[in-house]
Length: 390
Image 1: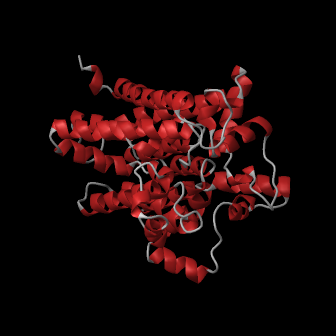
Image 2: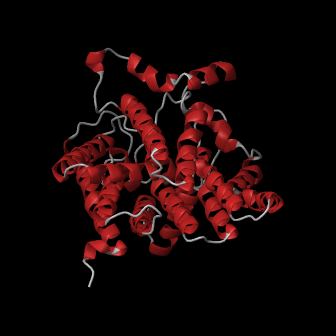
Image 3: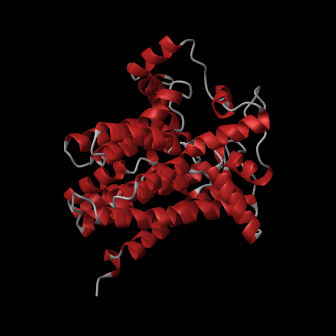
């Protein structure tokens, strides 16, 4: 009989529960002992899980969408996650926060299980220690505390893992396209799944003509969620691009495309955040810098994993798109704000981290994970206290 930790279901659920407990304790600590910097949520403990963007999802689940082109509006947030929350509200009678948290945690628990199965069957074989350490990295990396909030990240993570598992098991193109389309209804970066989908279509097409025909058929299908949301916005507000146009109210506006592109090519959004305040003002808890460092480290890990051939072409293309799309579209305008959260859903990053931890002495790996667990709890506490952790 196999040990419990060799069974993906039990291992995934255990790591989910243990790592999520740290976040819950951090939120509870922040609710009780961290002096509120600003009021971003209500006074009760459950409301502390719904600060910042979580408040928008709560509003959508409770009252639906509205659109005002002159100010921030919920149309910036894609519908799958709040729709699932509304469904849970209807079935269970829970309020919007409880329903959204239920969706987030069910999806996250399922994501850990799917990740464990995926790791077990990868082309590059992983021993049980590497699998466990990869799952722990997924659970303990500091920005993953967002997976346990009323945010859509855990839902999107689950969909990307199911997609990768489908590629691994050689599912049919229509099924993979439907999954990718569902991801595009969850977050705009869901269109990034087009890259691995097209690579998969190329590899399973006997001729170039077949590939082109399949691309013409399945590429639009892989964006069906985005198209459906745009259609809803058109019929509801007469503005199919309301989700994009409303972004002007988040962050600065680039003076021109030339200025923006030069800034992106020179990595200005990453390094300029360290010029905003003197060295004495820098802090490992300051998310202006954390976002930039987290994103840059994630990109370096993907480049390293690709160079060392530790990632397959599907993992690499997915990770590149999940990092590149938000960098090109919002890094300049938002001064890298939320970049750590965007990078946290790039699952291939954890493959490289897990393998790296497995190569270290056990005591060193434990120390690294312990430090990560501390920051996971600390950022959760600061988030609950209304500090600018986003």
